[in-house]
Image (cartoon, rainbow, N blue to C red; front, top):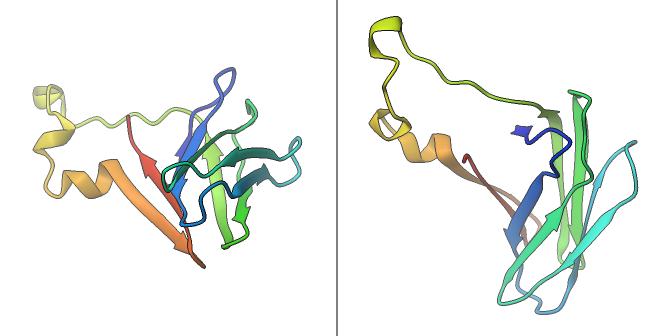
Length: 116
């Protein structure tokens, strides 16, 4: 997984079932944990700005469980096709939705991601 590099702060979002529950995310070995709360079954946290590429391990936890993301990188992703068709859009790819959105599930806690 590749996330937004610093100076911007990458955002993680997900779903959980316990309203008001605290969700904690931490980039292991890099800064302090950040927290968010479940509202309407959804949660969101902003990670600290990271300028190093990585790889990193990110742990997201709540009272419902824990999700560990391994080999997380921070940087830019460039998707290019051939020189004659550089105008190709993501929507033209076969199965483009799986490239643009996904989900990681672990013990009742769901972490979603979206390519923007």
